[in-house]
Image (cartoon, rainbow, N blue to C red):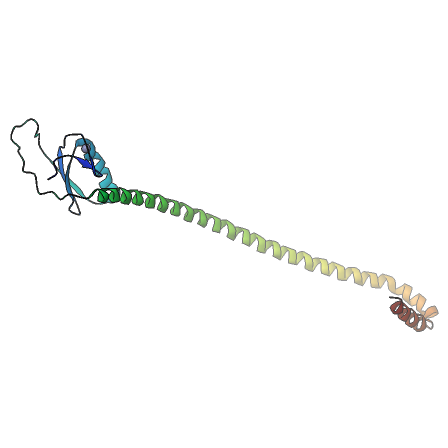
Amino acid sequence: MIDACKFDGKDCPNRPTFFYVWAWGEEGVCCDDHRATLETRSKQLERGITFSSLGRPSTSPRREYTPPQLREVPADVGALQVRLADAIASSKKLEQQITRLEQERETNVGKMREQELRIQDLIKQNGELKAAAANAELQAQAALELATKPADDAKGETVIEGTPDTQGGGGSRGKRSR
Ligand SMILES: [Zn+2]
């Protein structure tokens, strides 16, 4: 029979004032202070606990209540419940962290999409600039050809006969020397 407040397997010096039953059937008595602790734990565990007043046994000579048949709960069960409550609390923290990270990721994905669009835009602009540059080069070449043509024509009449020989000789000499 348990008639003292026990908490996590330790005896509590306070006078028990409540009888409690956990949703899973564990029963016990507790003091005012530990009732508050048990209520907190009940919320953390998301498991129900019911309390009933024990009355005031110290002032009445005869006990007004019949202590129910209580099941002794091993000390390590209490320790496990504490660990479970801790684990639940940590899990909730992690869930919040995950939610926050997911939101950050969404923001980052949005930023990445913007950057990708910007990169694509820049690639397109670069392509247009390259095309414009190539076009300008072609125009420049055409202009150069036009500009150099009269000179070729003028030279052509005087140098045209000697050109094949000097070119062939120069070409072969150039190859040999390398
Ligand atoms: Zn207590």
